[in-house]
Length: 278
Length: 311
Image 1 (spheres, rainbow over the protein chains, first blue to last red):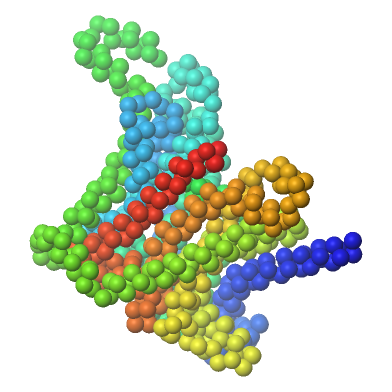
Image 2: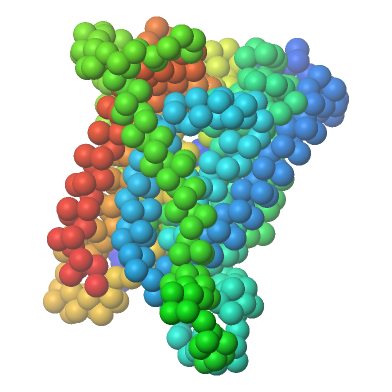
C-alpha cells in the first residue's frame, strides 16, 4: 500500500514536471520578448528580470519610425474582408451542396475538394503574372480574393456542408410550404442555425489571414500597403540588431491576438481540430 | 410556389414554360449558390495549376517573350547541384521535424488527457505558439538563438559554457530551425490526438483491466491501435506541411549559412521572385506538387482501408 502511494506521488511529480518544462519552453520566448521590448539598447547583453531603465519609449520609437498603425489597419481590414467573403460564399455553397439537388453536385464538390491538395506555392507564379496583367500587383486585391476563392475558401465550403448535412430536412420543408425562396431559407433559417460552425470558421479564417506571410511578400512592395507579418519580417532586415525595437514591434503585433485567444480558446481549438480532420 | 408558377405559364410556349420553370427551381439555385466558389476556384487554382505545368516547359522570364523549350528546365534541374542540396535539406528538415513533432504531441496528449488540476493551463500554454504568426515566432527564436544577446547562450554562459553561433553554424542551423518549427505546431497535433483519445471506448479499458493488462500494455494494445488512423493522418499532414516550410527559413536564416537551410519553397520563391526565372521556378514547383501528390495518394489509399475502423 505504502509502495503504491509512493508510486502515485512519483507519477504525479513526473507528470507535472514534464508538462511544466514543455510549457516553459513555449512561454519563455514570449516573456523574453516582452522583457526585451522594455529594455534599453545598451542593456541587451545583460540579463535583467525587470528592465532598468524601463523604457516605454521603445514602443513610441517603433510607432514613429514606421507606419505601424497602417500595418495594423491593413492586416485587420484584409482579415475582416477575407473572413466575411469566406463565410458568405462558403456557407452559400455549403448549403447548396448539402441540401439542394442538382445534377453533378457531388462531382463538383469532389472537384473542389481534390484540388485542395494543390499547394498554393505551385499556383502562385501564374497567379502573380495574371495579377500583373490586371495591374493588381502592389494592391490588396490578391491578398483578399485568392484566400476566399482558393483552398482556404474550399475548406470553408467543406466545413459548412458538413454542418448543414446534420440539419433536419423538416425545417426547410416547412419553410418551403410557407413559400420561402431558397435564398430566404438560406439566409433566415440556415445561417442562424449555423452560428457555432460560423464562429469556429470565423476565428480560423481570420487567424490564417492575419498570420499570412507568403502572399503579402510576393504581392506587396510599398511600405504603406504592408501587413503586420510582412512588415515585421522586413523590419528585421532594416533594424538589424536593434532587438529592443524589434521586440516592441513583435509585442504590438502579438499581444492583442493572444488576449482574444484567452477569451475564445474553445473555438480556436475546435477550429484547429477541424483543419486536421479534413 | 410550384403551383403558382404553373398557373402563370400555362398559356406560354412550351420552351418558355420549361425555361421559366427552370429559373427558381431547386437545381437553378443549386448552381447559382455554388457558382461563385466553383468559378473562383477555376480561376484561382485549376487554370493556374495547368498554366504552371505549361510554364515549366518554357524559358519564361520577367521581360521578353516565353519560348517553348520542352523538358529543358527539368534537365537543368537534374544537373543543378543547388537543387539537389535543396532537396536534401528539405528531407533533413522533414525527417527531423516529423518524428519530434508526432512523438511529443502524442506524449502531451496522453498526459493532458487526464483530468488533473491545472490541465487547462498547460493546454493553453502549449497551444499559444499555434496561434502566433510564424514570422513573430521565428523572430523571437532568432533572438533566443542569438550568439551573444540570445537567451540560450546567456543561460549557457551562466554555467560557464561558451554557446555556439547557432544560426551561423552549418551543423547547427538546420537543427535550430527544426526545433523552432516543431515547437510551433506541436500543440496543433496534440489537440488532434486529444480529440482521438476522447473517442476511444472506455469499456475497452475496463475489459483489458479485468484481463490483467497494466497501463503500458493498455496503451500498446488498446489506445494505440484505436488512434492509429488519426496518428497516420496527422503524420501525413505534418509531412506535407514540412515540405512547404518557408516563413521560419526566410526569417531565421535566409537559407544560410551557405545553402545549408535552403528548402524547396524557398528555392521556388528565390528563382521566381528574386531572379524572375519563372519557367525554371515552375519546374521546381511541379516537383513540389508531385511530392505532395504522392503523400496525398498514400493518405487516400490508407484511409480507404481504414474506413471500417473509423466507423
